[in-house]
Length: 287
Image (cartoon, rainbow, N blue to C red; front, side, top):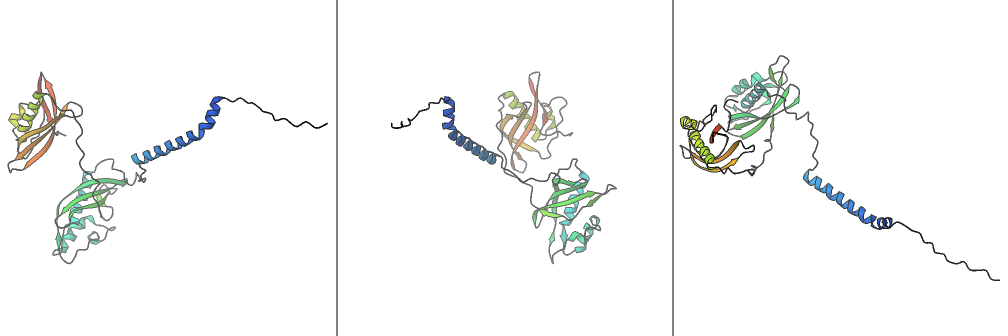
């Protein structure tokens, strides 16, 4: 008798259709997810690129302004940058009140063989507080020979409250600045009566005609007239400022010398018994 040959068998198993589809489509889903994650990361870095961390303590803005310390820094910068080799002792005497045991004579300034320099104006344009009680001021100074210079001056208050230099000065670059921003889209004033009042008020304001201007002012309005009288040539634009209780007027004006200006003024306006009135022009003289 011959042995029977083994027969092939077929096993039928059932699987859920969603599992079959998932197994087949999973690689494609993973690839799509990775691509989306990469695009998201690229967009994030393009919109908000990572920046080097800057110590908040090192560049902390002073919590309270110190006008006396600012003036002290500006005065030092003016005297430090003003010198004349024909009168070297004058520079030394001017700097002497600022010096002490921690700073060498003449604040380390050594004059050249010949020449002179004068400061036309100087003012503080930036301030920071690296440690409590010490301010580092950036002073902009216009000189007649070196042009516009920026000098940092560290000023500290002693335990007794007096001011003193906290180190040598340093020449630095100008604070960061960029081109002028385009004017935001504002809603144009469409009321002819308001435009008439604004134009008339600005004409009298620029001409420093207080009596004529008073006719368009609200009761209690306080306005300080400009020191350079001008004539209003035309009003180029009149828009509502954000908040809808003031307007922005761009005008062309000319002074007595024939100099032409393009100027923008913000005017607070209100309607009283159907009539438009001006309650403020550009600034608060009492602030």
